[in-house]
Length: 268
Image: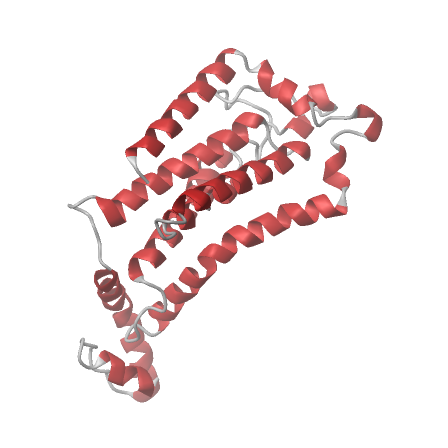
């Protein structure tokens, strides 16, 4: 997560936005590579192994963040117990996944950008007019094309790659790139997304990851510690935990400290 990676991502993003903004028909030409009228349209979408590969890609991505989500849930239920995952690791993976594959995709662009998917445009046998990436005035009403949630989720694997040991980090970045491209290729092959949908999703995910990594790990003014995140979550979750204990036992549990946290965890 250095400035070189940021510069590359920004240059690629600017190039894609400009090129496909000036010549939006390029999106149609790339989508047409997967369109076969004789086979009834986007033939790959009906293949069982292709659908399995699509779902497996999402399982793989979520498998990377699942331990951190579990650790957060356990911490919020039993705040006097130490985190099962390092605090910064948990915060980094959970926040970047929620931001890139959740909030930025499904609660912003996909909710307000009415671009129809390739399978739905008239050029490929659908009922709606094609729209360039920059035009949100399409006829799609719900779960639209721009930009790709699955593409953003696949490219989110840059986040765990950024936490790999330094010796393995370059290989992890390459693996995340290949994984993101392969998953995005499947989405195009199914007629689910245009090239700009998946590439902009991937670059947006990378930018989110770069910013959150800087916030948690790199920038002196905001840099966090594992123990600091653990203590903050303990403070956040303690009122709810104390209320539950009071309802069950009729007394308030003592607040955890560095000295009694280990002792208390054996009484839950």
